[in-house]
Amino acid sequence: MSPNRWDVAIIGGGIIGLSSALHLTSLFPKTRVVVLEKESKLALHQTGHNSGVIHSGVYYKQGSRKAVFCVEGVKRLKQYCQQKGIEYDRCGKVIVATDPSELPGLQEIYRRGTDNGVPDLRIIDPDELAEIEPHTRGIKALHVPGTAVVDYARVSQAYADDVRQNGGEILTGHKLLGIQRNGPDLTLETDQGDVHCRSIINCAGLYADTVARALGGSNDVRIIPFRGEYYVLRPESRGLVRGLVYPVPDPRFPFLGVHYTKRITGEVEAGPNAVLAWAREGYRKTNVNLPEAFRHLTYPGFWRMAMRTWRVGLAEMHRSVMKGVFVKDLQKLIPEVRSQDLTPGGAGVRAQAVSREGRLLDDFSIQQTQGAIHVLNAPSPGATSSLSIGAHIAQLAAQSFNLPA
Ligand SMILES: Cc1cc2nc3c(=O)[nH]c(=O)nc-3n(C[C@H](O)[C@H](O)[C@H](O)COP(=O)(O)OP(=O)(O)OC[C@H]3O[C@@H](n4cnc5c(N)ncnc54)[C@H](O)[C@@H]3O)c2cc1C
Image (cartoon, rainbow, N blue to C red; front, side):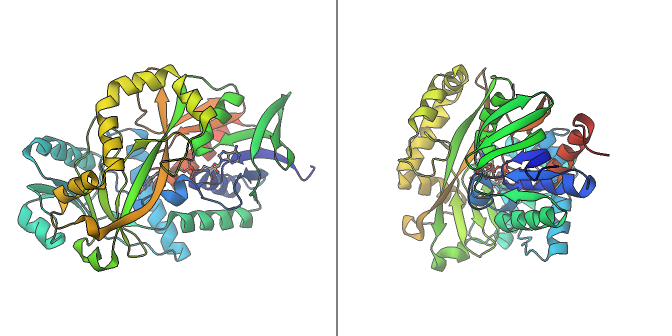
């Protein structure tokens, strides 16, 4: 076989592409696997810009892909980190109701978590909350002691090392530009020349819908980018938070609400919010990519989504430009926080799939076209679930692709 001819090409060197490569190369060692990543380094987009939380699986409807992959993924990920000597901190989390109207939502999360088999969940009162998080105020809270934090870029690097050790190839600086089908084979046009393969696994994150469409995927789902902006607590204010402090999320929106996250580095972040971005990789408020923005504006699902969620969307935009509003929301959880405790932090962009009907897809979405598997919606807890998603994709590949025996 020529050196640039592969059985399976995986598009995207984020945590899900790399986990898929890891599972394919270890379960099916005769399969020649290549990962194509457009950036010069791995994990530079969602994977390298997330909150670093190993979620426990409390939020998700029983039986959903998120529930199944997250609860299973946590176990696998913690075990993997232990094997590889990757540090993670089981700092625990509280989800805090600050208003009686939030109590049914809190109870529902407790019920879902229990249904999903998340261990050691307890609804606690303000006194116990004060023992766990002395500066947090609330009328009731859910304590999730197993939640942890990790550096997902480091985890991805370990997956990549394993892929290479298993004989897989990872080509960074290779941007997929187009795809030609020649009978059973595919020619992938990249900015470094053509790469030939039999099958594709599309893990292109913010560009997964465009890759899917190039392979005959449906036009009924579009990735709409939602930027999540963070503030960082000044080092002298970090003592306000011990672990992870979350609000009860708005059930109309698939995001968790601005929260405090202790990073594995010891830094404490506040955020992320969720504002519409005008570029798929629009990490700054001023980033606008006109062709991408135009494609969103001409997608009927975008306008239907805007009609449904304009009130929440406007509130998010207001909070994005007015630090005072951001701080006020954070003060609901920790009243002592002041604007001067917070400095601007980084941002991440979520690849949120939106249907033609304008619905934000809540669950993970993995679809197939001839000779291809597409990861079309893998928002949080995608990083937590990466090992179970990768294992699932490798099984799908074994069923649908003609992998060498
Ligand atoms: C703000 C934020 C906070 C989050 N917090 C958490 C959290 O705390 N815990 C958790 O479990 N999850 C969290 N998530 C979700 C998690 O980060 C994602 O589920 C996960 O990173 C998705 O991985 P991925 O590999 O699908 O995508 P990505 O990491 O985005 O990787 C996709 C890759 O494809 C490459 N690519 C795209 N187009 C091409 C092309 N044409 N050719 C070649 N390569 C291409 C990109 O460069 C990129 O490297 C968060 C996400 C965000 C944005």
